[in-house]
Image (tube, rainbow, N blue to C red):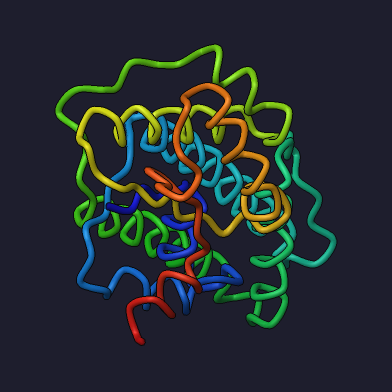
Amino acid sequence: MHVLDTNVIIGFAVDFESHHENCQKFFSLDILLKTCARVINELGRIQSRRRDLYSDMKRFVSRNNDISGYVPSINIKYDSDKTHLIAILIILSKIPPPQLIRIIDRKKREIESGIKEARRRLILPSIEPVHYTTLETDLDKWVTNHNDSQIISDSVCWAEDESVEISIVSNDFSDIIKNREDIYYCVCAFRPYNYSDKPFWINSVEEIIDQNSS
C-alpha cells in the first residue's frame, strides 16, 4: 500500500510542477493509493492559498493591464508557494495582456480539477490512526515540516493495524527522501522492528514507477 505525501498530489494536479509528468505516470499505475485526513487538510490549505494568490494577480492585472512588475500584496510564507508563484509568473509573462485574466482563471480551474481527480483515486481510512505524538516529536529532528512527521507517524500506525507493508511516497528529496534512513531508524527506536522486515518504507515517485515497470 502506498501512502501519498501532499506534494505528490500537487505534482499530479499542477501541470507546471517539476514532477508533474512522473506524478501523472504514478497515478496511472495499477497500485493501491492511500492518504490521511492530515494530507487532505493540508491540500485544503494549499488550495485556499492558491485561490488568494490568483485573485491577487487578477486584481493587479485589472489595475495595470499587465503582469510585469507584479509583487504579491498577500503574504507568501511557504517555500512551496514561492516556487509556485515563480513558475506561474514565468508562464504568464509570455501571455498577451488581454488574455491574462482568462489564463489565470483557467490555471486556477485546472488546479482545482486536478486535485479533485487525484482525491477521487485515493483511499481514505474510515478511522484515523492513533497519533503517536512522541514519535512525531522524534521525527521532527529529521523532517522540517511537522505535518510530514505526522504523516509518517500515521503510516507506521497503519502498518501495525493492518499488518501490511506501507510505502510512503514523496517528492521531497531535500528532506524526507534524503533522510529516509535516519527516519527509518528513528521509527525502529520507537517500535522494535527488524530492519530487514521493513513494515514501512519511503520511496520517491520515480522509484515506484521503476519498480512497477520492471
